[in-house]
Length: 243
Image (cartoon, rainbow, N blue to C red; front, side):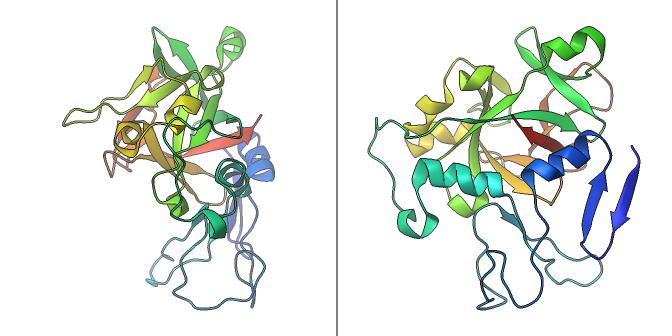
């Protein structure tokens, strides 16, 4: 995939799907005296707001400028209200969420999308007949875990099936017949195996299993392999386009 580097903005723009994903789900980090929300910086050690990823600058040990995912800011505000007002507040068990899932088309960095085969999500090149079988993902916040880490329930079929990491000693990714909006009302312990911390790097996203730190949603280099959980050296970054 051809890419062009814009060093002044610090953003990697990719042709085709990746470039479109940036236009819909990301914006450059603010520079100068203003902070990531367009307000003056208060301290270099301030905690980052929801949907912000701060990464180490290569060779310096300094933190790179944070990048905001505006979709996640909007999603959490629709479900939970403003962060300042709702920090540490959880709804009573059984409460119904006030909003609906967000839906995304997904591509990995090799431009493979997701299809459902034999009850499992697999990554394939979406050409010809495969294009009609593409499965978008849906996401809903987990209201119990730290909001700044962007904890999400991830599913398919409009949010009627959810991805789970299982409850055994080792992670085992599988789809379960449980709705994302139902998970929103579950208690913390029951909901955690279905939760993924989403990080945003300015153009791509990763999904880390909350119940198994260091394991991320990943695809294999070959086509037709199942979506799995793997350490960061696997294909664990994805482009997203909001539907």
